[in-house]
Amino acid sequence: MKDRITIGRVDKVDFVELGLENIDVKMDTGAYTSSIHCSKIEEHIYDGVPVIEFQLLDESFPEPHDRVHRLTHYRKKDIKSSCGTVQSRFIIQTEITMFGKVLPIELSLTERWEMKFPILIGRSFLNGKFVVDTAKTNSSYKAKQKHVAK
Image (cartoon, rainbow, N blue to C red; front, side, top):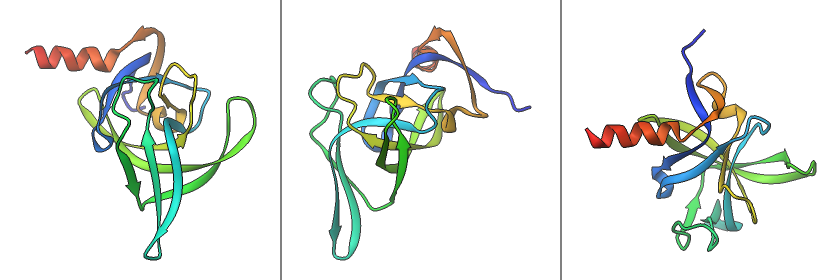
């Protein structure tokens, strides 16, 4: 069995490619796919190339939200939402930085209005790498702060 890192139920992580640092995330072992709150999610065709455009977060989160992201590498997937309905969502591949490691992660783009956490980290990312201890919080962020203080 591989060594797995124990992580808390919530944390602060970085998504460097998306311009997000110390962003709040919640581990959601009930969700298979990780998701990120976006607005203005639109698919376009430019010069025959499919492009997904979106803005991260919104005014209700204290992070930058005015930058329009445009990606050509994405896919669509049917995902069952927390309320049980099936939604067709766009999935992007990016990188997450946790415990000083840069790891690949897939995120579904969704409008998570009125949710406390802008990002949910699902089982497909956690499996084999992390064990969730619901009594802990901000394990990766605390390790990062300890490293910065040295």
